[in-house]
Every structure is written in structure tokens, then in C-alpha cells.
Image (cartoon, rainbow, N blue to C red):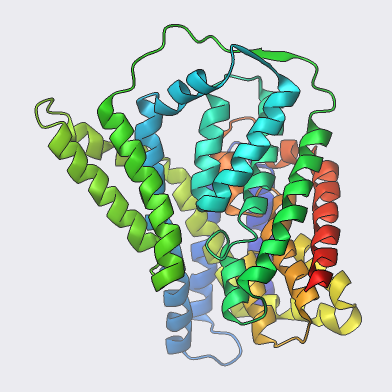
Length: 415
């Protein structure tokens, strides 16, 4: 009875996310409400004979995951908020891009930028920066949705071949299912699938984008320094994670503190250090609260044992078919607990199928806008990007995902 009640509440929560643009109730409010309510019910009526101590332990584990993501987002978004407010990113765009470019060429440039940037940084930062570049161009809503869709898919694809680029890739690597050399084989199919999606999305684009460059503003040395700290933080996060297994959160908070200290030293005479620190207040906290609500809901699903049921797919389907479906399922269920459940089930697969599974869980979340961190970030930033508007491109997304999955499966045969 309690399980049915919680499942109903979770279903209602996800429905309210879908119809947000119809009911005009912010998704952060509904997910936070239902997420906390589900856990309150679990404490009142523990499932499967579990003790209250077990429920507390599970909740603490869930809260730790949320807190880690919250703080990491805060650090990354503060960097981006500062650079955006100073017009740094827009200024760079004006210097690099021509006065006029076709919409199709712009589509491929955005695809390449998002893919490459996510390969050297985390998905969240890559999404924020890529969106900032496109949003500075003031495109109309329908076209903006296409570019945002491409960014989400490209960002998820870019990080799938590196252990620092995607959490599930790291989990599979640490479980000794694949090696770094194996993972590098995913670069080609992942990149090709992004090009396929860019081609499909740009088919009806015939116009050009004209940049109103105006007078170029000089880039202040302070802004260059902050941007360099941001880039160094990204590179340092990648390096420290590989060499010393230092959590990305720690290095990003260190980079944020370095940003504040540098600003105090460089801007002491200008007396604007307080404004630098105040950029934390410009972060969209409804995005962070949405993350809290979603992860609480996923944690409740895990406690119900729903996630563990997905592993039964491998009892009725071949691994290559089950992996493909698991990727699609990761669009509706967080891919981290889904991957964890599969690893704990100790399902036997060869390296070829593990590589295909790595691609599937890393990119499959792109099928729904709420299926990945990149999608959630994009939905909070782009006004016209809703659950419904994203679904209009679902057929193109499915084609690109399928092409990438087949490519990753056959690249795995080279092992």
C-alpha cells in the first residue's frame, strides 16, 4: 500500500514537470514538494521491514549526493555568472565569429564546441558555457530550442569516453569492466552521432545569422585573469581526478576561492570585491532546488527497489538489445543508480557490450530534456525549451542515439 502511494506521488511529480508550461507552476516547487513528501512517508512507514536507522542511512547517502552536486553547481555557475555579466563570452564570440554566418554552419560550430568542451570539462560547465555563447546571439525561440537540443546531446556525447567526463563512465571503469584505451574507442561513434544530429536539425535552416558587433570593448585584464582561473580549474579538476582521485567538487571550490582572492588583490583600488562575491546571488537557485527534488524522487525509487528491477531485462534479452533499452530508460531514471544497480547485479558481459552500455547510459539521457543534468540546466536557462518543445526533436534524437550506439558496439569489436 505504501509502495503504491509513493509510486503514485512520483508519477504525479513527473507529470507536473511535463505540463509545467500548461499549469504555470515552477517544476522546482513541485519536485521539491513530492520529493520530500515521499521520504517523510518512508520514515512514517518503512518498507520491507527496514528500521528507521536504515532509512536515515539511505537518506544521508541521498543528501550527500545532492550536497555534492549543489556545491559543484554553485561554484561552476558563479564563474559563468561573472563572465557573462562582464560580457566576456559575448566579447570572445564577437572576436572569433564573422559578421555573418549561415545558420547551418553555426549549427555545426555549436556542435563541435559543445562536444570538445565537454571532453575537457564536466557536463554542467560545458552546458552553461555553450548556452551562453548561443543565447548571446538573440535567436528566435524555435531555433533556440534546436540549438539547445543539439548542445544537450553534444555535451552528453563529449564526456562519454573519458572517466572525468561522465560519472557512469567512471563507475564502469572503476569496476574494471573497461580500460581507458577501450573508452577512447567511443570518441569516433560519439562524435559521428553528434554530426548526424546537427545535420538533421539544420536541414530546414536556410537563413543567416548577422552579428551586431558594434564597437569592440577592450577585455579587462581582470576578466582575462578570472577566465584563466576558470580554465585552469577545469584542467586541474581533470588532472587531479585522474592522478590523485581528488573529487571534482574540491578542486572547483578551490578555484572559486582563488577567484575571490584574486579579485580582492586586483580590484582593491576599484572597491568592487563585494560585487564579485555577490555574483553567487545571481545563480538561478530554482535550478538547484529542481535538482534536489529530482534526486530525492530518484532516491525514493531506489528505496522502493524499482531500479533493481531493470536488471531483469538481461534475463529475457541479449546484452546488446538490453543495453540499448537501458540507455533509453536512463532518460526517465537517473543513470547513476541505474548503472550502480547493474554493476551490483554482476551481470556477465564482454568488453564490447560494456562499451556499448557505457555509451548508452551516457548519451541515452538526452532522449528526454529531464533525462540528464545538461537537459535540466538548459531547460532552466532557455525559456522556450520545455518538455513538449524538446519532444518535437525526439525522432532526430533517437536516430542520432541509435547511430552512436551501433557505432560504439562495433568499435568494441576492435578490442
